[in-house]
Image 1 (tube, rainbow, N blue to C red):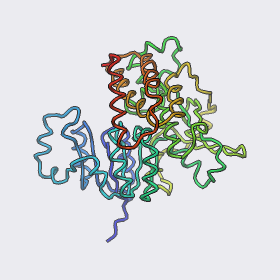
Image 2: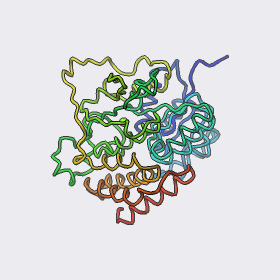
Image 3: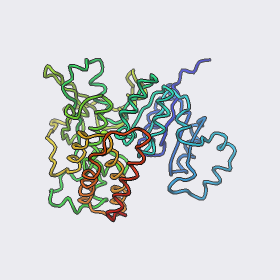
Amino acid sequence: MSDKHKSVVVLGSTGSVGRQVLAVIDKHPDKFRVVGLSAFTNEQLLREQIEKYSPERYYFPSGGVEVQTTLFDFLDDDKFTSRCARSLEELASYPADITVSAVSGIAGLWAAVAVLERGGTLAIANKESIVCAGRHLKALEKKHGGKIIPLDTEHSAIMQCLAGEDKKSVASVVLTASGGALRDIPVDRLPKMTAKEALSHPVWNMGKKITIDSATLFNKGLEVIEAMHLFSLPAEKIKVLMHRESVVHGMAEFTDGSVKALLSRPDMALAIETALFYPAKGSAAVPPLDLASYGTLNFDAPDLTRYPCLGIALKAAKESDGVRIALSAADEVVVDSFLRGKLKFGDIAVILGKVFDKFRKTGDVELKDIFGIDAAARKYVYSMGVK
Ligand code: MG
């Protein structure tokens, strides 16, 4: 009997994106079947998810950041151990129809590689892997006949705007940015802002790291670099447009002066459905968009004085892999420190600026060398006294 369900592995199933992916799957029990799950720290929620979905495989690292005492109960329980993968890569190798990578950080890189090496479909929200290894991931996609589908709202929108278009006719693509939690704070007050203030995002409900990256707009710079890799475009052809309502998610501008845009209510469920149903359209992602209720949509050029981290990332987009890997790693350290109250908001750009100068000339790198640069950048940030 053939199974009409698409089988789905969700790497990082207890994080913000992972939970949203499962919520979308829950709306389509006749279409998808969860066959694999993984978490890094939230053992309790993973256990609940395993009970609910009964996946064939799961992964939870015994070296997780906040290993709880109950972990040993978890691993002693035969029902669970028999399905436990030995590594995230092993779980990623499982022959699911779709593997979602909602893992946070460069830790997700080898899992992404494992999916593409088996010619699988990778729905990816793990932006650090695309930023650091996008060239390699695209080469693996081509070599093994797999498919990379972006889960980020902006890239999902651009993918849909570019569908069926001749690449030669694409003049540029546009990523929109809401401006983050501090967008209306006077510029001179920004340097002293705290994590609590930077975490109250006006539009999007996301994980903590990405919410801070949205407040600095470093996130949008990383998305420019992702777009270069995902759509094989030079940095010059990728633009950032401030748009506070987050209704227009992405656009493609063509050589004849026409523009295609993708609009919807701001809800990540749309990008998730788009990826899960690809190449078909989903059916229940978001309620219809009532543009009359908005009345006005606002657009502005980004102000690099307000958002120096965006400026740094845009400069890195014009350089090579090495400095992007260094900045991505440094940002993980700096944002973590900021979230723990050890740094002020203004320190983030100062430190990333120094990392840019130090690693600017690192050049392009092979996959195996990424973690070396990542470690060197973290060490450099710690050498500045960041805790
Ligand atoms: Mg985004």
